[in-house]
Length: 158
Image (cartoon, rainbow, N blue to C red; front, side):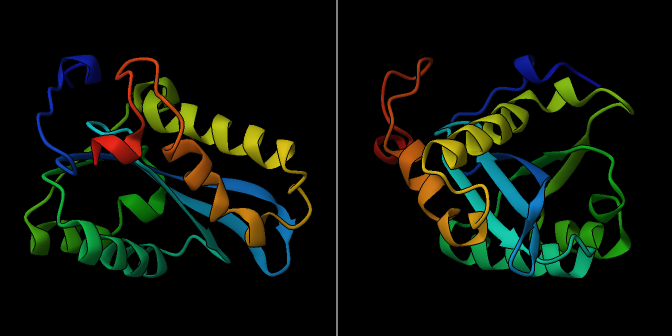
């Protein structure tokens, strides 16, 4: 598989990196679906009660209804991203799917860094115990912050 650093993107929403972030129980929620755009650095984080493939596909479809269909999605090799329903969604939307090598999460570094940012921001706003309520604010904070590599905010880039 080619290095992600060599995968060029020239438009917003062309190439996404996704992950499921496991967090401590908060209400009925345990997971966050994290979606990160390579070009704009736009971040989306959605609280999830489970990580079942059908539920992930449903959330992604809602996101795509607002932003359009990506040309490519990159993820790790967890079962929900390798499922028949997920691959069917990709075929339906004309989206290519790539994945990290087994046991190499650094190959999905963009979203892994986003996961760390989410956890850090939740701590800063003291949202560790009720993160499912506060989580929608975290991408707002991230998306309105200047990114080192682009020198603008994801909000401006989008």
